[in-house]
Each structure stands twice: as C-alpha cells, then as structure tokens.
Length: 328
Figure 1: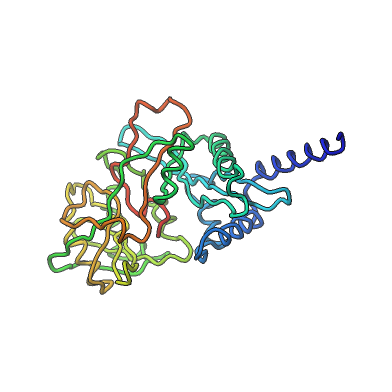
Figure 2 (figure 1 turned 180 degrees about the vertical axis):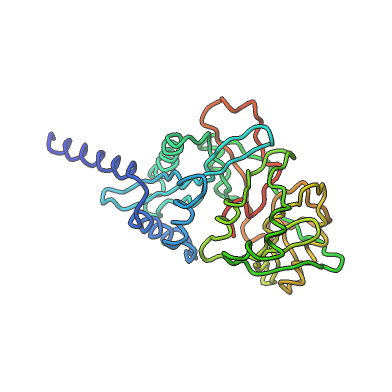
C-alpha cells in the first residue's frame, strides 16, 4: 500500500509540474494540435505557426493556458486565454479571451473539463487578468453558465447587410506591407481607435497589425470616405458571401455609411451578399437578421470575473465584431 501511495503522489506531482510548466516550447503547441485533431472535424487551422501567433505573440503578452494530462503525460484538456483589453473610454480592464477549449473524447465525463478550466483560472490570475470573456458555441455556452456559474451576456446578431450606392473606395488583399502604402497609411492616421460609445476592445495599430497577421487567414482592407473596413469571404448554405469583420471610423465620424461599406465588399469580393456579426454603434445601414439555423456556427458570449472588485463596472459588449476574436 505504501508503494502505491508513493506512486500516486509522484503521479500527482508530475501532473502538477506539467500543468504549471511555462508554455513556451513547440512541444507544448504540438500537444495542443494533437488534442485538436482528436476533437475537431476540420483541424487544419491548428498549426504550430497559428498557435504560436495566438499564444505567444500578442502585443499585450502571452496567453494563460489551462491544461490537463492523463497518466501517460498526454494532454487531454486545453483552454487558452489570450489577453483582451476592454475599455469604455474611462475604465480599462484586461481579461483573458477564451479560445481553443477542448477535452479529449477519451476523457469526457471524468471531470477534465472542470479541471482544465480551473487551471486556466489559476494561470490567468497569475498573469493579472481580471476574468475571462468566452465566445462559445450554442452547445458550450449553457454549460459554462450552468456548471461554472458564468454570466451569459446578450447575444450578438448576424445580419445580411443591404448594399447601396456606388461602392467607391480602394480595396486590397492584406499583406504585411499594405499599411505602409497609400491610401492605407493616410487612412490609418485618420482612424479613431479611441471611442467612448460603451465597452469595446482597446485597439491600436500594433494590435491591428498583429491581428491581421494570423497565419492561414486571408483578409482584405477597404478605404472609404468615412472609415477603414476589414473583410474576408465565406459560404452560407453554399453561397459565397463577403464577411465584414470590423469597421474603424475616422476621427469625427459619428455614423459610417454601412450601405456603402457593403457595396464596396460586394464589388471587391464579387459576392451577392455581405454578412456582419456583432455590434458596432457607428455602423449605419439596414439589414436583415440571419436565423441561427442558417449560421455556420451560432456564437454566444459569456463572462466570468475572478472577484467582485469590477462588479460596479457593469461590463458588457457595446461594440464587438468578428475581428475582435479569432473566428476568421
């Protein structure tokens, strides 16, 4: 019995060492990739380059990663929290944006989900995060709320935007040098990254350049009279669509012409429709909500704060779009 007790203690110690080790090697990332290949049907986006970009290269610092391992030191749980600074123009708070939540099929029903998320709490608090913002699918969100006590924030809608006008402007596929060329360099100088229209991510040029450099992604930038827009393409029920990922209004612009933005995307991508998910208070124009049954993966927003020190801030998302996290 004593020998078995010693072995068990060594196993627990090994698990603790693995979970608390610095997440700095490609071997760590390889463990995540292997897990993702088990869990997700199309794991092509999970590469060493993409995970290194997400977990290590964010301008605000490295991700806090919760992990779980089996008795053979194989990773069976993962939840990464990428730094996310929210501001309402007066207050600021740094949360961990939850990505890559996965539990191995072989470990489901064993408590690995809770253990992994709890470990992410520990890592995030050590790095000074005030809490976690999760973008979950329709199946995961209720579990985060019911099992872990998270707050379910109001759903953000997906809309088909109505295009109108001439669609004049300049568009180009993003490259690392694009923001150093005209008219993009001049347009960036006119962008208002600071906005006091409620809670939103605190953007700046460094964050934008990092976000647009996601390995494997393909983005287009559009300069219009009142904004810079970021887009990509996708398919909805087999129909190609332009996807409006983010709109950055120019200084002094209270309302962006959403119809003109949509037309610019239609002309550039040569797609019949433009889709926008989320909320941007300066984005005008009309559209029609897309039912969840027609959405490729309906998304819900959940929030967990580690203590009550920020409760008075009434944190919510007044502006949040697809470029604010890693859906595309």
